[in-house]
Amino acid sequence: FVSANKFIVSKNFILRKFMNIHENLKLPDHKEAMNAVNEKGFVILKNCVSSEFIDSQRKRWGQMFKHKNVNRKFVRGGIILGEPDFISYSDIKAWCMFRSFEFLWNKTSDKIALDLHLEIHKFRNRMQGFPSDYGLNYNEDNYGIYISTSFYPSGKGMMLAHEDSHGDTPILHYMLPYTFKGKDYSHGGLTCKDKSGKLNDIDINVEPGDIIFFDGRQEHGVDLVKGDNTEIPGRLAVFTIPTHFSPSTRFGVMKRSLEIYAKEWANQLGLIKLG
Image (cartoon, rainbow, N blue to C red; front, side, top):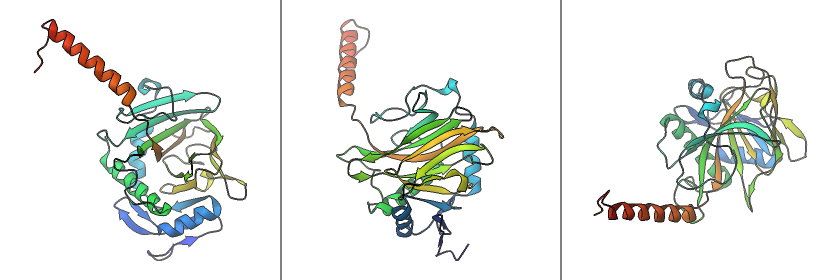
């Protein structure tokens, strides 16, 4: 490590040492981080998040991803403004994973985690040249973020390689792992092609407290996760996903109309009073 206001860019595009942003978070200069992503396609920011926070999230999520807690079957796309938080599970040819969806319009169960992810998102916005609060306020594009915690269970968890984008707007993903290759699982994990087209094993270089940033337009995926040496056998990681939420107008208006009709009908029967 070097002094607090400098960092090292290694040949593997790993950035080290930063300034404190939050009690559990320290980050480097956003321009230097973005330069690394532009050059390589991804970057690993070393030792950004406190070990206390990582441990707390392992405890929080370690027992959460069980089939009894699942109430949705899809893990990607079609998010509607105003819907409740949920946990999903999907096992198809393209992927196998559990995924939690936490939305900013709902009450959080972990304020410390929410605050940390908002700070990382603001940092990501600065990297891309956006206003820091972009995606955190109402806007005509229905653009915002949600917190997604994903668990790829050992022996089954995977996701086929793919690319992400919002039309002409690049998606810059960040990922904060809670389990680690070589400790919680031995094979598989996140891969990402760099700008030269070379496929990189990202997880092999990640340690507790590191944050991964990568350009969603670079082909990336999760190779089949194997190994069950700890109490959390699989790959567990979190990231805030930027997206354009689907307005609930069509179904919302229909639901509202049915509710009004039902209330008026019940009022006519004398079951309830309206006023």
